[in-house]
Amino acid sequence: MESLWTIRAEIEIESGDLNLEVGYTRGFMNVVTWANSDQSARDKLSGYLTTFDWRLLGVEESAAADLKNLTPDSEIKILIDRAIGNPNAIILGTFHSYQEK
Image (cartoon, rainbow, N blue to C red; front, side, top):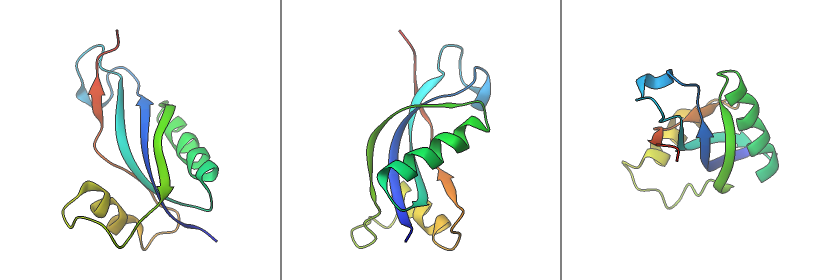
């Protein structure tokens, strides 16, 4: 049975996407999706990112969502609230970019 999963992912986006400065194509973001395992959450996210020509570089953290211990105004809480009624949801949070070396 699927449940909500939270993921902190490192992602590479296409140059020019999100109006970022040149060289800032890698970053991290929080993601919430429905899945039945860590691997299925990763696979779902990776497949979704390819629709934007983006690439999943790695996952720093992935876990079933802890719905009891959420800070009311946290980004994760907001993402979960958006996903909770939609079993097809893949909700992306803020992209925090960094410059490649």
